[in-house]
Length: 534
Image (cartoon, rainbow, N blue to C red; front, side, top):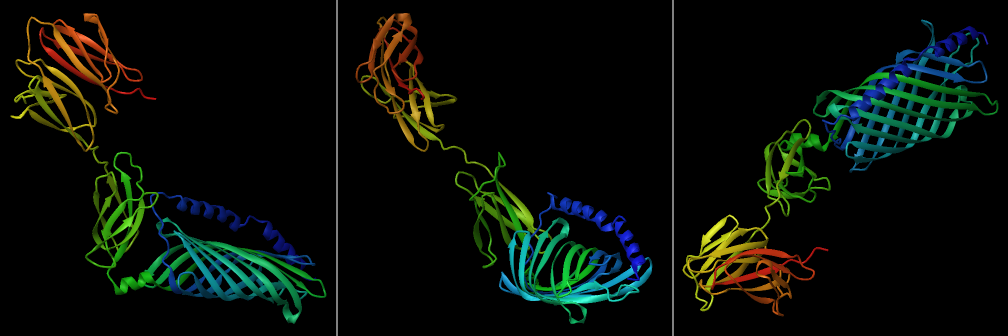
């Protein structure tokens, strides 16, 4: 062949560092940096009903043809593709699409143009889509047409010829919403050849694939129209083998381009802006006010979009979040959860821009309390004693005319009540306060008697069940050691003074009480013992 010097020049050009290999890693780093931004939330794209996209730009192209001859390599800056995509959707998931693409093509020796022309690709068929938050998946199948570049047929210089392939085409597309309005698109095509022929109608077989990616950012928005700047890369691999002769041509093409896409779309969001009031999304986070832990299953009441002037109830998910569509302006939301106090917050809703965020911090309700009704009576007659001093911790009250005093707001659990009155022996009793209930306690006071031994009378019970216990009562100072009867009662006679009394029973916590008695008086000591923890 007479163009071998040109082949050598083109091979040396391919060995030079490629701008595509230098720029592609930087593009990948940029995409990863945008995707990892934490202070911005990407919003899922609105599902359009129809769209029309026109695209044009420039690209750096690098490729090679491998055949039975010496082969051919080429690269350079050439006009990129002019492309048209028309898509229509029936409902949310199913639709159809038409893609047409024309690529200008030039082959140069240094600065001299050797040959050139244009190539066309197209596809037609049904499509399906699925949105997963900010990620949208599309899968298509149908008919695919492609013109493949072939060089040959002349001895002086290579000439661009066009092979044709008809195929059943399987295509996929992934669109990811990134922060700051960026989008990342990945796409691929796999043709299943139905028929193919080279220039002149020579029958051939063909195979190949196309994969690519693009980083997009809108620069102009006008209602349904959007102008988007896109940086894209593409890898194409196509083979064609002539039947009968066995001649085989293999094309490997890598290109990177900068293009402007003008798109028109008809979607629900545009209809709302024109026909109804402005509205926006609010992301609500329901958390514990003390720990910041998300609260799932919270009931949140927000203004209703279906019936203006009313409200509707939504429920937070497992992460304590929910997303509500609300009218534009200042809107309130109230959250309620069992065991927490209700919380209300206000969010500024905008019909444009990203979703507003509102955090509702709920505080746990204070534990419920109980009350204790104490009645003080005289020992022998059972007559109520008025104006008797009753003390429980920091609470100090006096009985009314019928000998009764009510202690409110007591924490659940055991409580000690001290009772004293002039002319009567002081008494100390133990009681158990139950949350949300009013318990009762009767305290019996005995009159003081001088010149006689003091009498200690009491009963030992279980704090859990209230049943009498057979317990041991020890008073070391008086050298007294006795046991309670079957009813849990005991009696001990001692001289006036202060004594340390120890009460113990099997499988219960031992208690020690300090009691002061005067000669001749009777002191009543009722004690509730708590079972030992297992």
